[in-house]
Amino acid sequence: MNNFTYYAPTRVIFGRDTECETGNAVKEAGGSRVFIVYGGGSVVRSGLLERVEKSLADAGIAYESFGGVKPNPTAEHAEEGRAKAEAFGADFILGVGGGSVIDTSKAIAHGLANPGVSLWDIWSKTVPLTKSTPVGAVLTIAAAGSEMSDSAVLTFVARGFKGGINTEFNRCRFAIMNPALLATVPKYQLAAGVTDIMMHTMERYFIPEIKCDMTDEIAEGLLRTVVANGRLILADPENYDAMAEIMWCSSLSHNNLTECGRGKDFSVHKLGHALSAVYDYTHGATLAAVWGAWAEYLYKDAPERFAKYARRVWGVDEKDDIKAAEEGIARTLAFFREIGMPTSLEELGVVPDEAALDKLADLASAGKTLTLTRIKPVRYEGIREIYANAVKARK
Ligand code: NZQ
Ligand code: ZN
Image 1: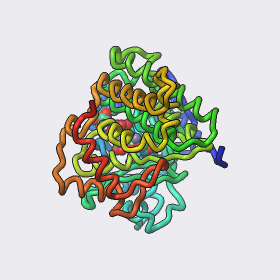
Image 2 (image 1 turned 180 degrees about the horizontal axis):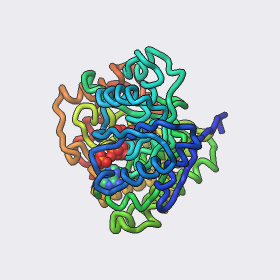
Image 3 (image 1 turned 135 degrees about the vertical axis):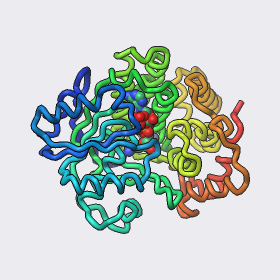
Image 4 (image 1 turned 45 degrees about the vertical axis):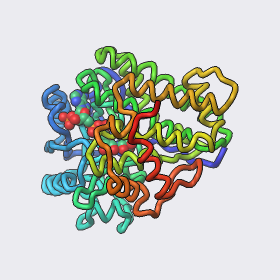
């Protein structure tokens, strides 16, 4: 087991009606003027925004609300929010929504605490981030894990770039999670969320053998829980208990718990982010679309790891590591298909030509400077090959 630091400072307030505790949670975190951030309107339609605003008002907290965050949120929109938060004199940013809303909230918080510094300066690390504004979250979809993660992901439209920054300033002070709020999430988004949760765990699992029994057990248990309960919530989104499992998994999959002693990779995410930057596809769907080609490219270089995954997560009963690994990959792809996720670029909606493949590989390799995967170094040419192999669905 490698040395590690595990720190997950977000206060989790979990269960039915917990959104009514927002006012007290903000107060305890020291906020008095709250800038609420939300998305395209689901929280208005469900009445959640009104309940959150009432909770703030009851606690004597001033607030202003800012909507319009889109999936694959943009830096341009976050800059707009930063200006409004500044004009309002906000001292606390509250995201009411999913990963896109929470990431925009984090970006606004960073911008607000650093006047005159652009979000690109922060994302490109031209200006080191040394301070921010406190952020809290009321979560409405189980997927990105931003509510407990140290990450925030934005698309810079003018630059054609989508990417994240990792910093402790990205940690929410609290995350309010009421699984009942997820009953209205569209099925495609639920399935994309299930995929994203699995991927956050798998991106920390497919790292060549370092003995980490406890971390492996947590990751394998989490994956089995997501598969079993993912099926249940897709059959019945009103299944509170199943939704609660998925919601809790979403946070634990991305608060660094499943990387203790091992670390992380996130190469599938790099491939997915490039697809979202160019085509604006749903995040989880981009991951499902490339994962098969990614796994096929790598499993023979770490057969024991893929075989362990197959046996422990999918119950594959096969002694030969290579055969077990292949069966584990096949079962994963079958599950993605079962929940309505694409398993190829074609199914995602695009058949990239040669120039598009160049562009995707260039983005995912950060202009041929990045080497991906902890299994073996995969550079621009390898990344391009994975995209090319991802065009058609595997058998
Ligand atoms: O905008 P509204 O109207 O709220 O609708 C949203 C949106 O259309 C809808 N939705 C959310 N909760 C709902 C609901 N509809 C009905 N009822 C509800 N209760 O779902 C759609 C997707 O929302 P979004 O916030 O985009 O989903 P998600 O949580 O998957 O976030 C995706 C973003 O997070 C980034 C992704 O790249 C993507 O930009 N990620 C952030 C991470 C982080 N900060 O740690 C890590 C992830 O790997 C990921 O990269
Ligand atoms: Zn993700």
